[in-house]
Image 1 (cartoon, rainbow, N blue to C red):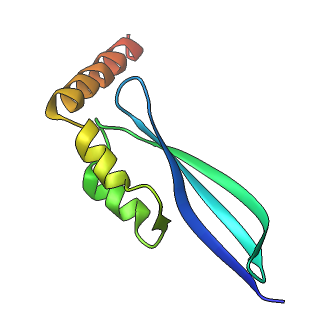
Image 2: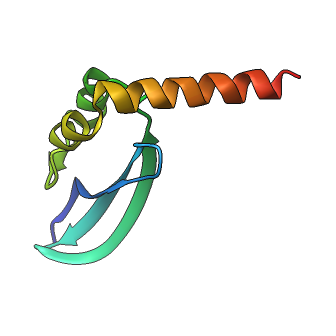
Length: 96
């Protein structure tokens, strides 16, 4: 009876302001048969995270979806600028 674990990115969703919601699946296998699966989600923000950060976060994981490719195609300078402006406006609003 051999237990193995695999972790891979199986879903990337594009949210309203250009954020990427990344779902990682952790699969536990017994003799090659799946016995359990769990998920972890995180949101990558174009105003905060960079493609370097995305690359660091996915290092060591088998990725069915290339998060860097999605981020680089979605996170244009206009999207990044709009998100940074929105975050700044929210921060200003919350300090009042």
